[in-house]
Length: 173
Image (tube, rainbow, N blue to C red; front, top):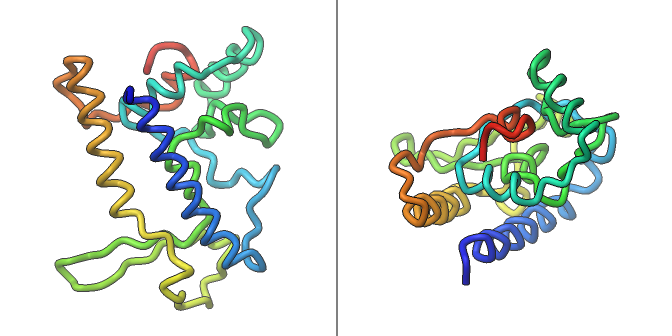
C-alpha cells in the first residue's frame, strides 16, 4: 500500500472518531458551512502538504485569489466565501477544530482539554471522556506516516512545517 493510501486509511479513522464525538455533542456544536473563525493559515507536515498539493484542483483564478489572500491575511488561503475549497483533502488540524481536543500531560498526570469557545462557552468546565477527541494516538500515527514519507523521498527534515499559503501558491508540498 503506498503512503497516500495509508494516509487515506488514517484519515478515515480520524474522520470516524471526529464523527463520533460530533454526534455526541451535536446539540452544542455550531460548526458548519460558513463558520470559519478557526480557518487560519496553519502549517502542516510534509506528508499532509504533499497530499493536499497532489489533490489540489483549483482553477487559475481561484489559485490567484488564494495567493492574494495568503499574502494579505493570516486567514487560510483555501477559504473562499466562507467555505473550504479543499474540504475533502483538508489536513488533520482542520478536521479536528471545534471539538474538545484532549491531550495527556504525563508530567502533570492530567488530561488537558482545548475547546472552541464558540461551541463551548467558558462556563462549561468539564467534559465526559466520551465527549473528548484524544489526539495523542492520532498525532503519533501521523508522525510515523510522515517519517515514512520523508524516508521514501530522502527528506532529512521530516518535522519541518509547511505553511498552507506555500501550498496555495505552488511553492510548497
